Image (cartoon, rainbow over all chains, first blue to last red; front, side):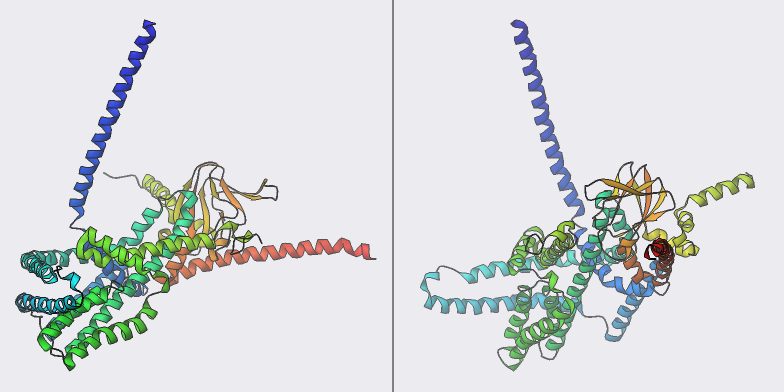
Length: 376
Length: 177
């Protein structure tokens, strides 16, 4: 009796020890994992933007490099030739046009942004008052204050961030060509190395799916970037015909926001329209600017010419997914996240679609079933 | 230090024979490739290692390329209607199989299993398609070599068919009389 109870006590002791160890090690692993992930996050936070930009540059330059490589030139040399060509083009452009007056432009913008925003506030308060006359129940909602706070925060951020972002741009100018050089030269080797890790059973399938996905992806990314550049150029050309200031910056904003479907172009045209309203007033020039933004850049150039040519229907995302992706991207990485969220969501969409397509086409049981799932 | 040239020579030869390029040059498909083209071929093939009794692929799988046996032994088998495996052939180092899937996506008609631990050199369609865009000239030569071997096989096949037809028709003649 006492023997068995002693045995039980030993059992309890062992249980106690094992459980304590398990809990302690669990906590230790959890805390070390969280510190590890935070360390990882801090270490890689500065790498996100340069790697992203370098990938985009690599995707854009890939066809050119292949073109030169086809003539029997070594790939590394081909990349150097492309780099040399682009550097020469930029230098030539600077020599012909002269360096753009960035400093002056930014100084002027610093002075002008509060003016534009205060105008927007006045305009919006006017609108709000008009609305309050018709719908009295929104009287307590003070939009002007919200906007004023937001604009003050924005201006403060711009003032603080300018020197820092100048340094970041400097580091980007070094890092992006470096990264994209290695992506261009070694991306195939890196991907081959990764694919060779797959087990024998799935190797052929993974290789095939990877080939499809990478083809779709390179087309999609190239198409999106070319689309953004052309839209930016069209907006620039259209705005240059008027007396509006900051046409290059507005064109840049329009081009970048064009990467986000549905929502992007609307936000891209807001600064241009505000500046046009403040500086030029409602007149023929204002209507022309509106026409450039909506009719020429969006409807004619983008929707009627570029999208049918450049972007395949495969990568179309449902608007609901677009909005969800924008919100999630904004939570993760701020404004940059909002811009790149939709392309990344489209990339995931392409991958899923390709895998489904592959499985459907090459399903061995496909022979026995019709498309409706009935036995043939 | 004055190394003996005799030993040096032997070591160099051995090292040379162990390279993938040397091995590929021994295969009839790639025998007419130059040194540079062999180097290029080395970059587009995949080396896959299989343990004994591991399936390389089964009948009905989606094939996307061919395998060349570098070492080991591969058993080609088909499955009959009762689900029983029938051995079709035993392949040794230097042989290749699965080349039909290289040109078009279709299910594998037979399965392949490694009977010993084997090292296979895989050449797959997606790599060849990419290589045709980036290096058309050497890829064309590789495909030409493949085409030559397949044409040889087809020729042999049709000869055998003729032989069979003649043996079939020969005994029928006395019956008709």
